[in-house]
Length: 334
Ligand code: 6MZ
Image 1: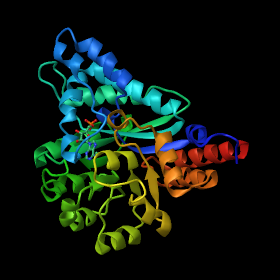
Image 2 (image 1 turned 180 degrees about the vertical axis):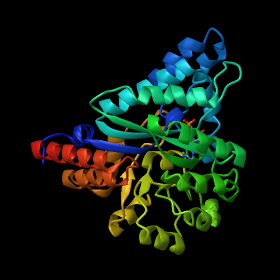
Image 3 (image 1 turned 120 degrees about the vertical axis):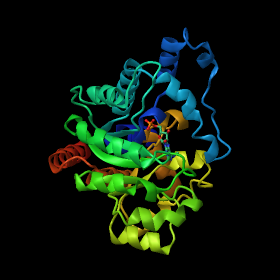
Image 4 (image 1 turned 45 degrees about the vertical axis):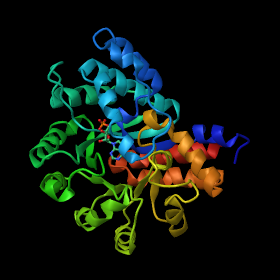
């Protein structure tokens, strides 16, 4: 198809990113920019560095205690969101579903509403190189009232680009069953659902509960027993695959053993995603490169993966149609 190196091809390939946590996507440059804004009030922030390796997934979630100090007011949230969108656009991501957990900060006066208002104001800024939508996340540690509040916010900001609801957060905390009524209400209102699913083996015990709500997509789906695989394949639920994230969080041992290999063999739909590109130092193009190098995928196969990802987006059919046409036009030229 082209004379480009694999890395160059993966950058040029038009891509869809469907699993990117806003606060996990802050690049080192954005972190430095926000530290500059905050360091007079909080000098200790200047010393923090994202580690380049983690011993286990339990070391991952505490990192957000630092990152959240950088995005604790509306202007910082706007800067972070704008920079993240610019970085994805530069990497030729043409459609981005960012996701974030509404958060308040009493010291700065930021409320969950003003937080989401800041994020959605930026995603709505008109640009012609990338379409951006938002998924609001319910954290596993939320209680039911907090989860219902997220659904209220999703409804309030629906006309400003909110397209779905997510279950995320520390994989060892909380139970989906306690939050189920909030997800059911979101579904009744027509919001598609994506759930972080079986990221660690201990989560398998709640898989029937998660699958019974009939999610529209699943994040990770690392550990699948026969029941899970049969259900996910039977309902054709696309899986958001985050290879670098899984390796760095040590939930998967090697790229070669990554569970994407079964999906490739079984031709089950998946989307290559970054998860937390700021924490894991990996852009969307890099995830395509890793998949290609690990599983010997050629340019045509990479193009098919990105084209098929469009079917899994939460935005409407008009956007799907336009994206497909744009991607096919790109292929004709390359
Ligand atoms: C589960 C994750 C995650 O929402 O503040 N998050 N949840 N599994 C993962 N895999 C590694 N990576 C990120 O972004 C940060 C939040 O996203 C969730 C965590 O709850 C984290 O606090 P927002 O924008």
